[in-house]
Structure formats: structure tokens, C-alpha cells
Image (cartoon, protein in one colour):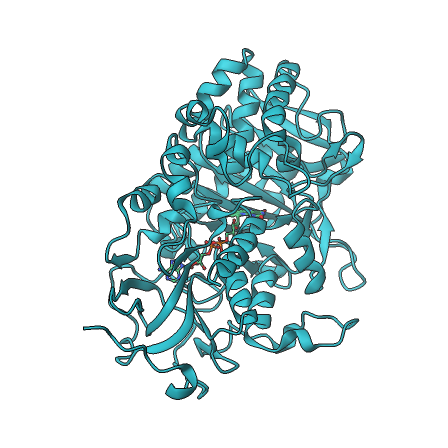
Length: 571
Ligand SMILES: Cc1cc2nc3c(=O)[nH]c(=O)nc-3n(C[C@H](O)[C@H](O)[C@H](O)COP(=O)(O)OP(=O)(O)OC[C@H]3O[C@@H](n4cnc5c(N)ncnc54)[C@H](O)[C@@H]3O)c2cc1C
């Protein structure tokens, strides 16, 4: 028997503001158990939306906004108690509460056209990443420095640098003609997809120093060892670091500033965002939920005073205009489809909703948390198994001043983690600019812990609570180790006596991310699964999320691009 199409929103009284009360746990990341009981029983009567977006990260929010522009009623279901997903800005600890730092994504750059557009649209200010002076390269338990503006940019002058330059040229040549978004069309797709990137490194580079630098290139981008990713995936990642008029290059991907034929083309680490990257999520949400674009031009278009205040507001359900809504703390557990009517029923912890179109805006590894009925095609499920997340955390270390600047250093470090320098392998300067209110701002270094070093820390303990309040053994141990890393790189000026505060943001232990920065392509996944499954719609199911993007897959830019693309596919 075919199921009748449920009533449209206006007929079910959707415009009535529905509020589900509950305390929000500050800005801390929700740690809802996957298997534990739901926080509140789902509404027994399903409500209908034209489209439902699963996931309130940048991709889901960009999709929701695009669907709104199509005139559809839209609901975003988000598992956490906040929007933004892998973009998460929080107040610094202790005396620096007034300073926002990014525990997840933070950099954007000129080649990321959508992010630059959004920054302008929402008056979010990109601040150039500090890049004046010398970078530190730590290898074989020894720190050396090199000019950040030198001929090789972020690549240190090491024994193997010329070999590395040749290998990079090979990647650049691949990149120029690479079919971005469709890597399976590369003439040697099978060959490169069967090969892991470590094998490619061994095959093309002889010098150990250059091999190490290429390994660092991979692990600093993906937070995994090169043996874990397909060489084809790596080439695609590089080629995708551009836009429709210019394919990417290793420099555009990993440099603060990249040049091409003498011209400045910007780079993936070019700017950080004043006030934090999560403003993109709040601004997209604000535009989705309100008639935001009607503001006159010339005025700031992103107005925090009218944003839903997630920290203090005890509502988890935001319904602004008829047919537009966001439900937080509402992980989707099941997506059932009635084969006769084509109607999907989504079961989340707080709502049961019906719709004809579902956009799933999650990393592939996280989609596995959802039970689909009927089951997804075998290839789609296997794709989820073959795109695991990298292992990553970010540490923020606060000093009275950015002392490294006085030493002519940028604050940037890359390290092979030799000696006992671990766990931080990549560092950037995140110090705020002096202002009238804060003429002497503190120095802030952000350190990435990734891949093997992160897995070792993950294995240390499961004391998640202790970590969050900053008092547990795990947290103290990580703090000590991170400060030790910095002492190896910067000397005693970076020592514990000089550290004013410390913060840590882990991702591997978050069930709604399972790591970061992105889902990686293991050998064989592109040629075996991508063409058929990565973004191919499935009778009303559409796939967003940065992992499905063409350009800048793995980045905020890719997330936004993928969200818009998936929403347009619904037409
Ligand atoms: C440490 C770190 C540093 C990074 N640095 C940068 C950077 O400098 N620049 C850059 O551009 N990118 C960076 N990235 C990558 C960037 O954060 C991501 O590419 C981007 O944010 C992905 O957005 P998304 O919407 O595709 O996915 P996500 O942000 O993962 O969004 C998915 C959303 O779905 C929710 N969800 C999960 N399961 C369910 C469910 N069952 N039901 C409902 N909701 C669910 C999640 O809570 C989440 O909000 C970084 C990432 C990390 C982790």
C-alpha cells in the first residue's frame, strides 16, 4: 500500500515556534553517547520538510542556505550542541578568555574563492598569517632555521632539497593536467591508486632528507603516514588546491604565501580569521534562519548581536521563518525509506521527520553511525570503510610576548619528531595583533599533533573528563610533552616557567568527527568506488561534506562547495 505524502509545513502548524528546553553544556563539545539512551523521546508524530540536511557543519549549512534559496522548507539536524562541526572556535583559558582560538579549521587563502567571498559577505576579517623572518626546521634532533621568504618557501634548505624540488616538480606536472573532481579519469589512475604515497616517495626520491620532507608534507596535510593514502589521492589533493581557472600546486597547498611565474597566488595557510573561523558557521546559520540579505549594503552584514547565542540560550530548537529550522543535539540514528511513496523518515534523538530529499553532509567514516533502511548499496558502504579520518589534535600555548619575533623567527616549525621532540610536528604563530585595548598582546603558538604521535597520545588514556577540565593526568602529561616540544625548537624561552596557559583540542575521541582534518583516500578507493558512489545521488539521497568536493576537498572551501553542489542536485 502506498503511503500518502504527509501534510506540508503550513498545514501541520510548523510556523508555530516549537521549543525543546534543556541545558546546554557551555561551548564544550557534546559527548553524547552513540549507544546511550536518547536525551528526550523523539516526537511520535513525524513532521514534514521538503528537504532535511543531516549535519550542521559548513557543508550542511551551505546546503541548507542554498535549499532555502530554492524556496524549500528545510530542517538541519545536528548531533552536537553547536554548529560548525570541524570548525570550532572557543575562548582561551585563564586570563585570556577574551581571545578566541580555533580548535579545528582556522586558515583560508586567496585560491579558496568561496571562503574569500563568504569572508567579504559576512565581514569576517582575514588576518595574514605571520610570515616575516625565519622558520625552524627540526631534523635529527637539531633545529636549524631558514628564510620563510626564501626560494623554496616553506621547504627548508636541507641536503635533499634539490631532489625534493624535482619530486615536487613531478607532482606539479601531474597537477597541471589533473582531472580535478574526477581523479578516476587520470590516464594512470589505476596505477597511482594501487600505489600508496610512501611507495611513490621511495620510488622517486633517493635522499633520506628529501624523503622525510615529503613525508612531512603528507602528514602535515592529512595527519596520517604516507603509507596510508593512495598516491592518486595525494595528487588529487594537490591539484584540488586551486580553482576552476588554476589547478593547485604543492606550494599553494602547504605554504603561507605561494608564487607562480613571479605572481603571488596565495596559499592554504595565508590568513587566519579575526574572531575565529566558526563565525562562518554562525553567519551561514544566521542567513539561513533569517531574512539576512535584506540588510542594506555598506553596513556590516554579519551582526553577532542577532545570532542565536548557543552558550547561554537554553533552547536547542531554532525555528525562525516558516519552514526553516535547526535542531541541535539531535544525532540522526536511522534513515528509512518507504519504497512505495519515496518518503524518507529520519529518526533522530529529538525528532522524527519525513521528507523527500535528504542531504547527508558528514564525513564518510561518520555516516557509518547511521542505519539506512533499505541498506545502502554495497559499494557505498565499502567506500565509508575506505575513507578513515586522520588522527589530530591542536595545542595552544600562551606566552607573555611573542618572544620568537625578537629572535627574527616567524614561529613556524616543521619537525621530524626526532629525539624526544614529539608530539608537536607543525607550529604556527597565532598571536593577536596589538590594539588600543591590548597594546601588548600575548604570544600564542598553535601546535599540531598528528598521525602516529597523536595515536600514541590517544592510547595514553581514556580520561576524557579529566582532559576537559584540565586537571587530569592525561592533560598534564600532554601539556608537559607539548611544552617540551617547544623547548626543543625554540629553546628555554619556551619552557614551562614562561608558559602562561595551555589549551588542547582533540578530534579523534569525538564520535561525530572520529578524527581530522579529513577523510583520507586509502589505496584503491578512488578507482574502486568514487565514480559510482562518492557524490552520485541515490534516489533522493544526496551527498555533501568536504570529502565529496572537487576543489579543496578536505578544507572549509571544499565543504561549502560540496554543500552548494548537493543542494543544486536536488532541483
Ligand atoms: C584540527 C583541524 C584543523 C583543520 N584546519 C583547517 C584549516 O586550517 N583550513 C581549512 O579550510 N580546513 C581545515 N580543517 C578541515 C575543515 O575543518 C573541514 O574540511 C570542514 O570543516 C568540514 O566541514 P563539513 O561540513 O564537510 O564536515 P563537518 O565539519 O565534520 O560537519 C559534519 C557535521 O555533522 C554532524 N554530525 C555527525 N554525525 C551526525 C549525525 N548522525 N546526525 C546529525 N549530525 C551529525 C557533526 O557534529 C558536524 O557538525 C581542519 C580540520 C581539523 C579537525
